[in-house]
Length: 184
Image 1 (cartoon, rainbow, N blue to C red):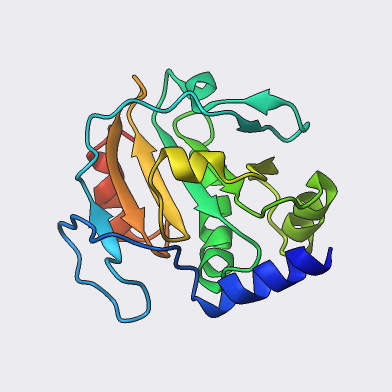
Image 2 (image 1 turned 180 degrees about the horizontal axis):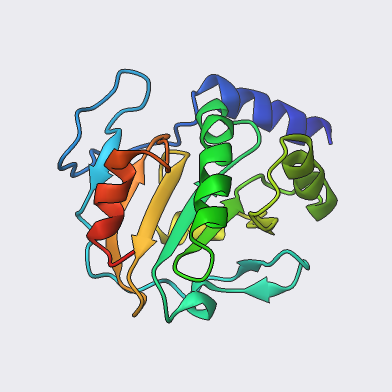
């Protein structure tokens, strides 16, 4: 537990950045708090990885489960302030687009009990998003997501349309324009 707390503190001080490589950004200016913040289309067309993570029941699942309609995948962590800031907008997006768009927010909190993720979401009044979890950050690695939050839009066939690095108001007109690109 002590190691987990120390790890979380170090990562929080790093402003949610993992070691990064230059991002191929298009359509958004970089913000000073998140290197490369904005839209990244460098991975367009790539298929969802088969990497497993845990569903809200704690059972293994993968992004392939969500094929058939556009899916927004959000990688977040409880120690990441920008992640926490955008979670309510993701929750509203999921509620407003139920049946048309999958919104899957996947906790990247390492080695944290599933009950802690559930409690965190409840404490922040996040009612629509499921408590998905990737406690080994395998999905984050498979997607080469080096900054949290990172959100990736997949089309209905499971191919990446774009990714957004950094936080975003997912209910804004700017977000609506991005979703139009993926048929959402």
